[in-house]
Image (cartoon, rainbow, N blue to C red):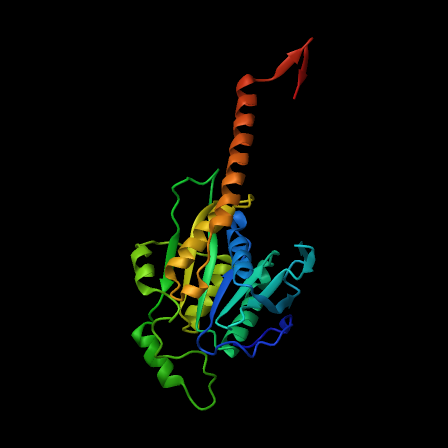
Length: 283
């Protein structure tokens, strides 16, 4: 896959410590409830990850992110000290006509750095406040079709780029049983940059999975992000990579109560009807 000149990845820190064929790439993008961006930022913080690169593109909405007293690039790549986890976090809109350019560049980077598997964290848009008993959906592609695998073996020549190991059928960092137990017979379409990344992984036979949680659009949803983190913990084998989601849960509960109070107040005002005084209507 050739990189598009309008999109590049600028290296900020040495990435030679990445564990070749052992690293997992976790991706979160702006979506319903911002759960993808919130959960990946939480992972970055809890695993003490450092920024290694940023994605620069004319297709990324111009701007910077100001957080924790620092200005940050809106599309960043991180790695942990051990080099077995990388995280992509995007906090700016990507123009629809540039998604392919951005994906091509990210996939080039992933292939050159021998990323073994990809995990996408995202939200599913729902109306109103999500139900308290909402459940995440875990979708995985852990085994390649036999015909695709045979074709990859036949086409692998001296001049070809080894984009993945054709013999690899299950990513070592994923708990297959956890994915299979949660992977009911869903039929759904995942679009945008998240779906595009998963599609690219399938094309290049990189095992991938997605964890999706119902969430409201336009309202930050740390509780939904906590559900993603808990599901992430259930499918990650390495105990050192698991994360306590308590802080996100607490933030989610506070926000949920605030939203419920706002909705209740608005409902009470609607029930009372317009207030009039001396023939004048207010509101």
